[in-house]
Image (cartoon, rainbow, N blue to C red; front, side):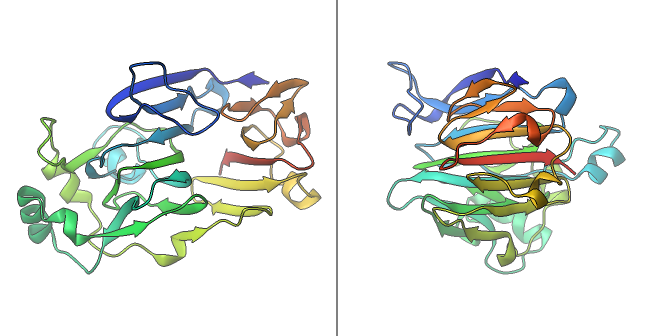
Length: 267
């Protein structure tokens, strides 16, 4: 078992007050907490994201698109599991109607792309899967868990006038100018075991208590364990909420009978 080391990242758009169990050091604004991917399961990256301002409107390429550019398999599909949201918090995902490349570029240049996105009001428990190429943005006042393909390629299309590089040519070349598939977003009830992601790049489950035999049979290889309520033990070592650990099979994990936990593995 490996408890993953963390990387705490300060961001201008981060927060100085974080949801439990996290605490921001005095005078800091924490935007992200990353769990360093282990060598034996480096296809996935898990992070917490905390926002006090809107993040850039952006998208990511697919594996096929990065391979075609000679960059290897560096595509990024991701999902968001909201754990806390202030009143009025929202996530922008996909367009309200079909948009062609020229219209998208003009809207990114003049800022009207913000109003072309569909902004979903969110609360704790809301879940969204974001396919590669989807134009998206995280709004202010959101805390969420992101599980993603382990890639750092991001194409920023619009950044509210902040002095950061944009990537209009690259981003618009791969952008999906359509609405987000409604089947890829839903609310996760407070209790109960539920499959959140069923491929194509990773599987993600929210467990309530003990996994049944069917789920255990799907996690015989390496997996990441992310406790949400109640601790788990992996190979006899405790992992508390706010942590993430590598297990070499689900039978190495002891779950709390009344706990909630996320587990994920590559497909």
